[in-house]
Each structure stands twice: as C-alpha cells, then as structure tokens.
Image (cartoon, rainbow, N blue to C red; front, side):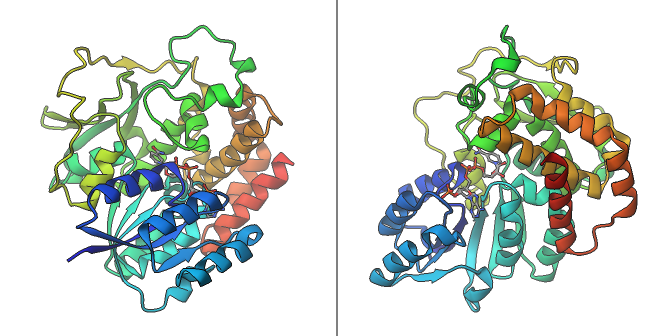
Length: 379
Ligand SMILES: NC(=O)c1ccc[n+]([C@@H]2O[C@H](COP(=O)([O-])OP(=O)(O)OC[C@H]3O[C@@H](n4cnc5c(N)ncnc54)[C@H](OP(=O)(O)O)[C@@H]3O)[C@@H](O)[C@H]2O)c1
C-alpha cells in the first residue's frame, strides 16, 4: 500500500528534495498534504503535480489566492493543522525553516505515524514539547539533518553510556581556507555553500559555522548527551557526517555522498532502499581529511564555552538571536561579521544573565516570549 505523506515546507530545499524522491517512487507514496509560505507559484505547481488532499498555509497575504486554487481543484485548504481532525499520515517531513516550524511540527505529530524532522530550530527551542508529544502519540521520530541522521544510525542498539565522544563534521563553509575580508561578504556570497544546496538561513549559518553550534545543541537534546561530549571537526569533503568514539576504543563513522536525498530516502524507507546515483562511485574522492577547527577564525564556536547559556532557556535565546540577526544580514541591515559579534556580546551581557535567571520554560508560549525578548534587544 502507498504511504501517505505530509510535507511541511514543501516549497523549501528539503521539501523539494523530498518531492524529487517521491516523484521517482510514485508507486510507494501518496502525497496528502503540501505546505508553503511565500512561494505560492511553486506550491501551486507542486499541488498540480502531486494532487494532495490538503494544502496548509497560514500566510494571510496569499490566503485568498490559495483558497481559490484549492476550491477549483477540490483540495481542502487549511490554515491550522488542528483542523485535520481525523487525517492520518504514514510519514511527515517537517521542513519549515526557523522557529515558524515549531507549532506546526508539534501539531502534526498527532496525525503522523512517523516524523522526519529537518527543522533544527524547532528541536533546539521546543524539544521538550516535541518529545512529550512523540511519546504521547507513539509517533516514531527520525532526525534528517545529515549529522544527526548519521549519529542516529551509528548508535542504534548501542548503550548511550558506551559513548566517549561524538564528532560532528563541518565542511568549513564557503570561506574556508580563503583569504577574504569577512566584513565585506554579501548575502549572495554567504549563501553559496560549496558542498550543499540549502535554504538561505542555514546557508548563512554554515558560512560562519553557527550551523555547527546549532547542530551540537540539537544533538545534545536528541541524544541526551552533555555538550562537552560533542565535538566539531573540519572535514572539507563533507562525506563523513559524524564519528562516534566509543569507550572501548572502537570508533564508527558514517560515509555518504553530500546529498540530502540519502538521509531523506533512507528515513522514508527505514533504510531499505536503493539510492541510485550513477555519477558517483564509492570513494571516488581519494582524500578524506580532518582537521581541528580554528576557534579564532570561527568565533561562533565560543558560544559552546559560555556555560551560563548552555541550558534550555539559553539554547532558545541563542537560536532566536541568531535567527533574527541572520534575517537582518539577509536584509542588508547589518554586515556578516555583526551576526556573531552581536550574538556573543549579547549572550555575555548582564541583561541576558538576569533574564536567564528569572525565566523558565514551562509552556510552549514561553519559547515565543524568549523570541520577543530577543527581538526587543535587537530592535
Ligand atoms: N537544506 C538542507 O540541506 C538542510 C539540511 C539539514 C537541516 N535543514 C533544516 O531544515 C529546515 C528547512 O531548511 P531548508 O534549507 O529546506 O529551508 P528553505 O529552503 O528556506 O525552506 C523553508 C521552507 O519553510 C517554509 N516557511 C518559511 N517560513 C515559514 C512560515 N513562517 N510559515 C510556514 N512555512 C514557512 C518555506 O516556504 P516558502 O519557500 O514558500 O516561503 C519553505 O517551504 C531548516 O530548519 C534547516 O536548518 C536543512
């Protein structure tokens, strides 16, 4: 029987990659829900091709246009996932970018048997709430961020106490090894990643290695490991995604081509699939290099040494401030180096120390209060 699929963020990089896989395996999948935000043209063309039962969007600017399209094409338009009522998806791909993905990810769990989460900001900011919902609704979770997908596979059936360290690899981003004045970097230069084709926000995060900081936090939450067991190493070829070092002297690493199709297709098929890429032979790249990351050149990594922010409330603050700063950079309101300079200055400030002391995350609304606080500082 075909698997019923829901894609949150189908118009984005992960969403489109998922649809490319589905397009080649239509006998196995039935796309039931698609969603987008600003890229209405693409959303409509995806809907024409995959004929979903539902389109989800809460973007009020395009509401009437999508509603009109849905009405003419016998598709249910929904602006709130709770309205799905009795729908059931075999697999959901949660690929909205930024904090905007948190509520939809939590809301969709109750309708999903399995959820593949790419949206790292929702894990960083709301893991406690996501995990609670996953357990309550018996929904199976697979992380599809490539490093986390690798760790997930490498430690399957292993005792978490047997792990000594986990290394997450970083390509180094578009400016690695280049003599470049980072103060002059433009948004279009920052989003040109050498090894991966991704959305704008994650590409900027990759350019200053903030993406690795977020990934370390994401891994510590998903795998319930202390931050100091998670290390970052530079591996410019992006072929090994994670290395798990066990206490018994053995280490395992996971090799796959730098193509997000691999973690996604394997997660869709629970690793029982054929990945066909005729162009690339195993080990066609004859050099695999690893080197220590230079903290002086990558000041974002200093965040992982700021003990006072390495807690749940602090993680949200890091993610929120960074998300707002990246948008300001993309809007050309600040320069590239301002993202990390401002982030570090704010995270070290007394204002933040006091805020973290006096605020707890008890309810999902508290996450958004941290975002509002972050916005108020940066305005
Ligand atoms: N791309 C990768 O290779 C990769 C790898 C690992 C993890 N991730 C993570 O996966 C997530 C998605 O990344 P991406 O690269 O696919 O991003 P992206 O290309 O920017 O796509 C983001 C998707 O989210 C939708 N969206 C944005 N804001 C929204 C809002 N306010 N409400 C509803 N939908 C909204 C976008 O819709 P419109 O386009 O229609 O505006 C688009 O469908 C991120 O959290 C990223 O960190 C990505």
